[in-house]
Length: 267
Image (tube, rainbow, N blue to C red; front, top):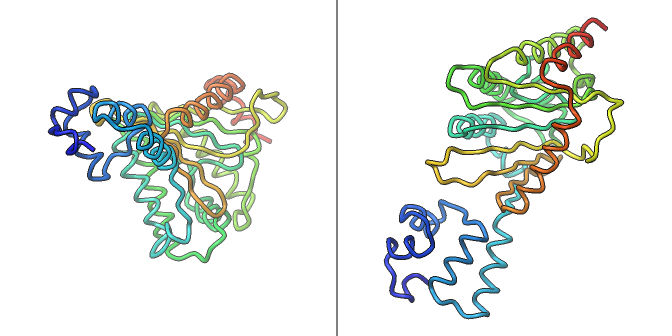
C-alpha cells in the first residue's frame, strides 16, 4: 500500500508520526503494529473502505498470538526459559500476577522441578536444563540494573505444594519468596485468602513494558494448560492493566506482605 501510494518509508513515517525504522520493521514482520498505527497507515496511503475493513480485521486478529506448548517445547523445555531471559533483558519493567503458585523467577531448584512437571500436560524433556534456566532468570532479576519486577500473588499461591516437593522443600520455597521481597529490584505483594477482590483471580499473567527507545508495545502473556497467549493490542493490554490495578488495591503493602510471609513460615 505504501508503494501504491508512491511513498518512501521515510515519507510514510512522517505522515503517520512514527520512525522510518518502525515502518521498515512492520513491513518485514519484525514489529506488530497496533490498530491505531494501522488506521493511520491506511489513511496515509488512501485505502478504500473495503481494504480498510479487511486490513483492520487482520490487524486485530494479529494482536493476539496463540502458541501451543507442543510447538513451544518441540526440542527443549529450556528454550522457553531462555526466551524469557532475553525478554527480561530488553524490558523496562515486569508486572506478574500469580494466583495459584509461586512465580517462576522466585523458585528454588526443587520447587521449580516439581512445578515444571505439574504445569505441563505434554511429555517433558530437558527438565534439568529448564530448572537451571529458571534459576538463572531469577538471579538476573536480582542483579543491579535489572528491570523492576513487581509480583502480586495470593495466599493460595504461597500455600500450594506441587507433587514431588516435600514439606521442607515448600518451606524453603516460601523462604526464597521472602528473601526476594527484600531485594531492591523486586516488589512482592500478597493478597490474603479472606480478602474480597473486585476482580476474579482467573489466571496468571505477565505484563512486560519496554523502554521507549525500543518503540515496542507493552505485551501481556497468559499461560494456560495447553497454550500460551500473547496480547499486544491496546484494548487487550488495558483490560489486563485494569485487573492488575484492582489486585494492587486488594493486596497488602510490600512491608505488610513480608510480615505476612514471615508469619506463614512460622506456621
